[in-house]
Length: 408
Image 1 (cartoon, rainbow, N blue to C red):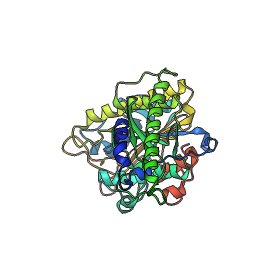
Image 2: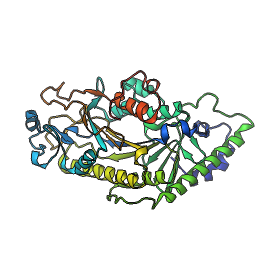
Image 3: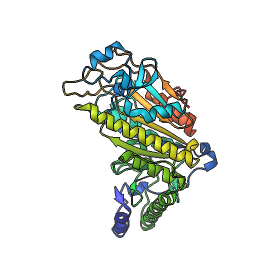
Image 4: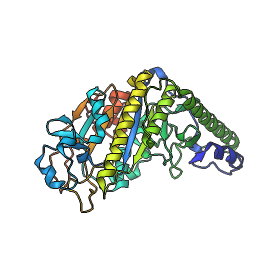
């Protein structure tokens, strides 16, 4: 990851390089697609719940008699839950989320997964981020599902900003890897970094490599464009401060990141995708307090973000997707925690969603090898996001046709 300062400092060295480094060969910006064609300027905000969220204690099937048998220590009392359906309630820390559901701004899709689930963090996250159905095809894929979508839409970024933004200091998620579309990352308005569309180990696209006399001009253009983009994004975030700031954001890392997204949107950022990561969901031990804190941070941040956008009259442009690489096993372990599982819930938030619970509530008496059976393929959720929200045909992105989930 290069900071703006590092990129400028290294520009003299790069101009003397005998060959174009692979990562530089991918950084040229192209003009974005006609904004009138971009489905009303709609934006997707992705929240990655990193580590494997325990869906059973998120959307709690308290009416299932097997729940108390499998969760003797981790069972959540029925009277502590936010009831959202017959025999189903949300964790009490999700009260702000339950209120979003009541105000028709939140849908929760139950039982989301994929065939032959992989319980490895790395492999399952790669499957979700590339939308490829198994670890072999996910490993071979050089671009993420959102990167491919932005490439297909010719949304590469403009002189005023990139096509996608990671808000945080993590490595660029594979979801945003692209062949042409530019992605930027920043942790706050004063710490802006430039992220390249693809990792250095991947080959540059055909025709992207300058040669001979074009090298110096290419490097100068790359550095100049990178600097201008970084400066504009920083200025945009600052311009967004104060516009319609009616919401009070909680004091959490995720809330801070979503507040930065809101500021960027208020400032007119051209990005179509924003991405934030909330870590800590790998709850193998002492799960109850950790999980409650994480869910509370998620729900509080989502409500503040949507309220903020509503006050700024921007909420109708935004859809939030929150997912985790897998759920947890239904039966608790011996360390007051849960181990890697399979299916889990996905959150979709914003005024455009069809609110409430979607999909079949997992049946704890019908497990497969001790795990939940998935009922909704995650690619049907992605198809809804692409086809129904962003207006980007999903079949070519997802490797085949998937029926869009009726959530938008």
